[in-house]
Amino acid sequence: MTDHKGKLSPLLKQATGITAAKGEGAYIIDPEGRRYLDFTSGIGVTSTGHCHPKVVEAAQKQVATMIHAQATTVMNPRLPELAEKLGAVTPDPLNAFFFSNAGTEVAEGAIRLVRQATGRPNVIVFHGGFHGRTMGSLSMTTSSVGLRAGVSPMMGGVVVAPFPHAFHYGWSLDEATDFCLRELDRIFVTYSAPKETAAMLIEPVQGEGGYVPANARFMQGLRERCDKHGIMLVFDEVQAGFGRSGKFWAHEHFGVTPDAIMIAKGLASGFPISALAASEETMAKGWPGSQGGTYGGNAVAAAAAIATIDVIQEEGLVQNADAMGKRLWDNLHSLKKDYPEMADVRGKGLMVGVEMRRGDCPDGERAGKILKECEKRGLLMLRCGPYQEIVRWLPPLIVNQQQIDEATGIFEEALKATA
Image 1 (spheres, helix red, strand yellow):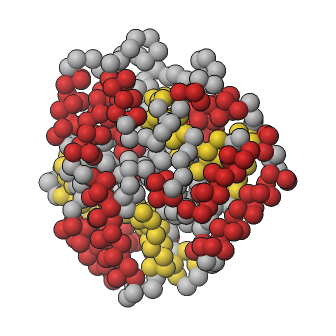
Image 2: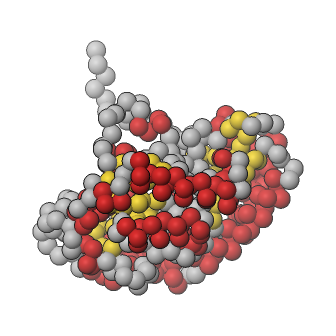
């Protein structure tokens, strides 16, 4: 007989064996009271750490006042307040915001907006990018074939261009950049004419694809081509934004301003909310009814997001991410001298990846073993990359020097244990 006791889907796989009974700052605490340094941050979500007192207070206060004020039915006072807060930290002229629940939903919103605003059908994305799991966003995702397997055909109108991943190609950064810009120009004469290209959509630092930063010349090349042809430039800052890279927005590293920004993950310290930012003029070019959703911009999540922005600014967390990122960078590069299997260390701020290799081959098996050894020693981390060969460092923005040093010490122990 069928067991009718409710169960989680067997397709939901945990990366660790830990049950989180409590979260506190940079730590997860299991039911037995063991503390683990959490360098996963819920995949970059708990930006201010677990249960930051100011975020908790804001959420509790809002829960007691109004939990759900559906945004297209009545005005939730937290939404204009959050829009004002975001408008103060987004680049000019991006001053209008569509709020939803998750990064994948603002990716869908971005597709609708760029097509409606330009009257053009095609979107250029970049090899290795991750933009979500719903069908439109998944059609733009090329970080791992496993995400797309079994659900084809994908949405039409998506063109994939190369990303300047110099280590992957085995080239200098200039060689990789020259190649990628040439191939982008070739796309315009072989695949998607400029007058049929609505947007280029790119992660300034690739996330699931392997923690690969873009570079200034490449990003400026995209901006130049978009300006020349009337194409919109959209930055997916879902993982790399909100201080994660050591600047408030990752694109600030490259001196380029986009036409729209996708925002989620660290926006509300763990509450589900996301945003698409564009100018009011651009937003007005979308068609009526193209933006909405039952839970989008939930009042409690919006209150938590407001508090999160306050905490980031009041506690100097962007500056801390920059300083602690440099500390992490120095520690890992010091280790790399003694452990050649750490083939590459890359990233920005507190978004750093270590690519594990065996000879010339990506070594996802070794990366997985390292994470298990780290877990035994009280450190939680994740993998990414097409072969799951990247050990990714994603601590909360509140992390301190002692915690960075402790984590890299545990990582070295894990390297030795898996040699």
